[in-house]
Image (cartoon, rainbow, N blue to C red):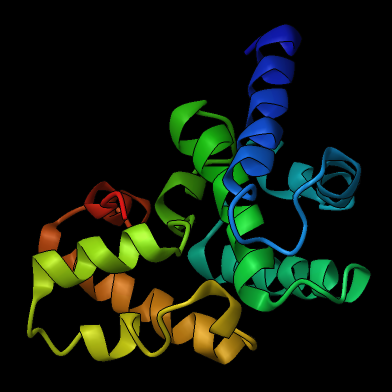
Length: 174
């Protein structure tokens, strides 16, 4: 991959984060969002040829989310995770960047659209007890709550026979 393609993809990924935060997020301005994104060690997951395993990715994700919350205390875990997940959805799933195995490990961005799509697809399925433990991003205040939602999404992915990130295909406009 060329350096210019990599730069285009990562610049676009940052812009998608900024755009996704325009509604309801406690940080919305480029003066807030772009500096926060620059604090994230994305090269850990994006660069290199050694495989990354889901457990490694999950630990990196937890640590990265905690760092964002510490740097910007008005961010709850839900908003911090959404920032990371939107960036990676764009850079990894769409832009095809990242270490081997990363595409299999990344999380879907959790928001009202995904909750609506999951509810429509899985109706009375018990996995909704996990995915819908809360139903607002601002209510995801700790990582165990976030992990519960992701575990429900993993169950949905297994039932749909798709990657975890591909649960995002259920996203429905509000």
